[in-house]
Image (tube, rainbow, N blue to C red; front, side, top):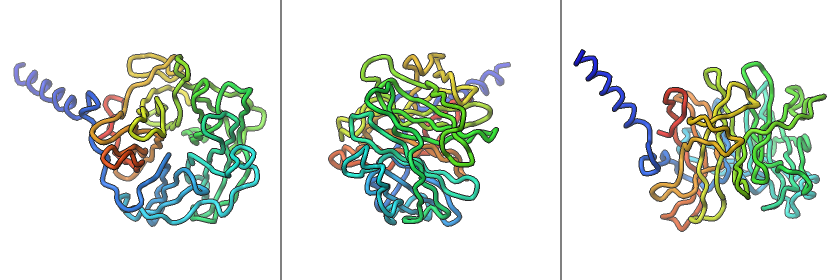
Length: 320
């Protein structure tokens, strides 16, 4: 009995040491080199390496052969679609979401002005994912200043039943989801429901950047709490909840609904890493990756790319 107890204690101790218990225990981002000033990063693996897309400059694109060295390779869009200027006078586009389905690459992206919910999410597709190869498909979902949510920060989920969902949202009243038509990537005909996934009760409801993954029959909603884009004053942190359905309800590890401010912390500021967030999740050959940006306190608050593997503790993710 004593030997069994010793084995159990040792196992529990090993598990506790593997899972960060506070921000002080969070691991540093994995080593990345080259052009790593990527904001709101989204990454896809190809036969020849990785393509990383990020905010600004007609959607910045970087390539990497090994997930370590990243080099700028141009911009996804050859030109800014005319409809974008209705939402951003400079034609700036933000927060892309890149994935590969049915033989082509799909990119959802945002057009808006900072602090406004006069916003839209667009779709572009490409046979190769390379700069200049993207064909814009137009607006998928838009909001006005009369709406209670914000159409930016899109993320595509294709679930195990083949259903397509788009989550999105920033401040206002939080994170939303709509159903898509897999044939077009646009709104599903006949389904105009806008599902509520997460919010924070206190004004200004600082939650954005959803990313949803399906794992072992559960759906995991990662979001960024706090404020982005303030350099070393940024308060972003990444939290998660899970649900048995893509449309929720999502609960955190303590059972609090994310529609009531719930969220289990996955990553927060630590060491020189300030305000990690704007995240996406990529399933790779060696595990799931958390891909995000942060502000480097050692570099005057410059934004940089962060990549960590995710571990899973009894059905809950943690960085490693």
